Image 1: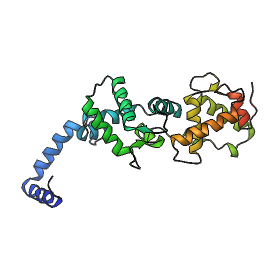
Image 2 (image 1 turned 90 degrees about the vertical axis):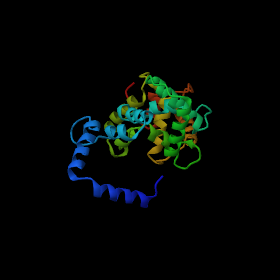
Image 3 (image 1 turned 60 degrees about the horizontal axis):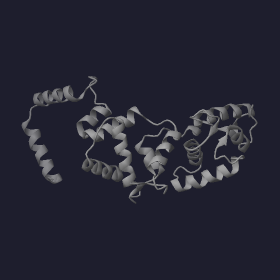
Image 4 (image 1 turned 180 degrees about the vertical axis):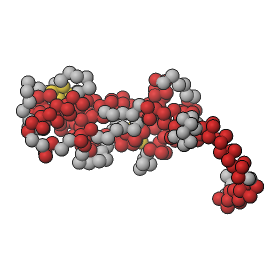
Length: 240
C-alpha cells in the first residue's frame, strides 16, 4: 500500500491537473449512481452500498430494518447460540449464528467467506480481544434497543402508578401471553433489571442472578415466575 507521503503527493498532482468543471461533472456522476433517494445527500445505506461488500452490507440492512426492541428475543438468540452454556459466544458459535441469519434471508454464503466474515465481526465487536463475545457485544451487533425498564421510576410513584407500571412491565416480558415468565422471558427481565445497576454484565452474572430470582420468586417451583409471584416479590398487591 502506498505510504501516506506518496498518497499526499498523488493527491496534490491530481488537484493540479483536474479542472473545477471536471470535478463538478465527476460529482454529478457519482451522486447519480449512489444517491438513490435523490436528495443530494448520501444516507447510511447508500454509503454502505459504496464501501461494503454485499454480505457486510446485508448485515447493516438487517440491523436497520430489524432492530430488536425486546430483550426476550435477544436472550432467545443468546441461549440458542451459546451452545455450550459458557456464558459467552465463541467464534464458532458466532459463525453458526451468521450462517443461520443468512439462510433465513435466503442468502447462501460460501464457507470461506463465512469464516472471513466471522473473523471480521470478532475483530470489530470483541472489545477485550479474548476471542469471544459477551452479552453486550452481541447486543451491539444486533442493535438491541434501549433497556425497557429505564422509562420507569417506580420508587417515585404512588401505589396506583406502581401497579400500572407493573402491568406494563409484565406485559412487555410476557411475550407468550401465558401470564407467567419462563425461559428467555425470565432471561430478558433479569438482563434488563441487572443492567439498571450494572451496565456491563456477563452471561455468567446473568445465570447467577436468574437462579437467585427464581429461588426468591418461584413459589410453586415450576421454573416459571407467575404474575402474582413477581408482584409479591416487588411488594405489590394486584387484582387476581
